[in-house]
Amino acid sequence: ILAQEPPSAVMPVQEPGTLNVAWLFRDTYKVIAVDNEKFEKVGRVNCDGESSRLFVDIHLELFPLEAGEVLDIGFVSTLQPHQAEAEDQETWDQSGAEAPVLNMFDYVMFGKIYRKTEDGGEVHVNVSFGGLLMKLSGSRKEFDAMHLDDRIYILASKVSA
Image (cartoon, rainbow, N blue to C red; front, side, top):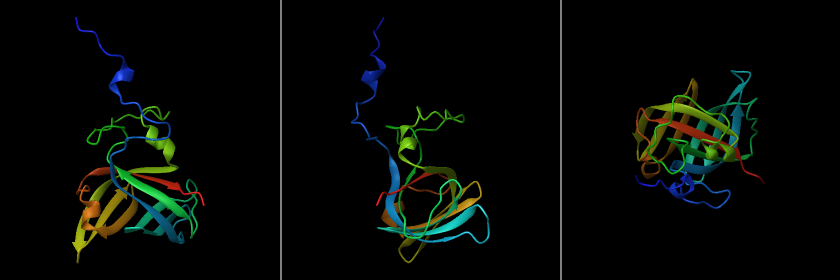
C-alpha cells in the first residue's frame, strides 16, 4: 500500500494575500458615468480602462458606484485556484473556503459570452449575467482567451484612493 502525501504537500504554498488565479483579462477602470434612469436598482456603468472600455450593468444597491471612482475588474473562467481549465461545480459553498479569490473582490457575477465581434482591429465581447449585460471592447490580443459560449465570472472591487 502506498502512503499518501498530506493535503498540504499537494497544493503549493503561497504568500498571504496572493492567489494563483488564471485571469482571462484584468484591468483598472475609471467610472465615467452611471446611468440608472431606466431601472431603480440597476445602472449601466461606463468605464475607461488602461487598455479597454467597459459598459456593464451593476446592481447599485449591492455595489454603489459614482463617476470618478476607480475599479479593479478581472475575468476568470473558474474560481478554483491553480486550475485554469477547471469546471466549477453546480452547487456552491458560500463560506468562501472553496474560492478564496472571492474574498479579494466586492462584487461578482457569473455569465455567458453571447457575442464576440471584431471591427477594424477592435474586439467587442458581449456577456449576459442573467439579464445584466456587459460590453467589453479592446484589442484582439487582450481577449484571445474569451470565446463565444464561454461561461465566465466578472470580479470587481473599488480601488482605494
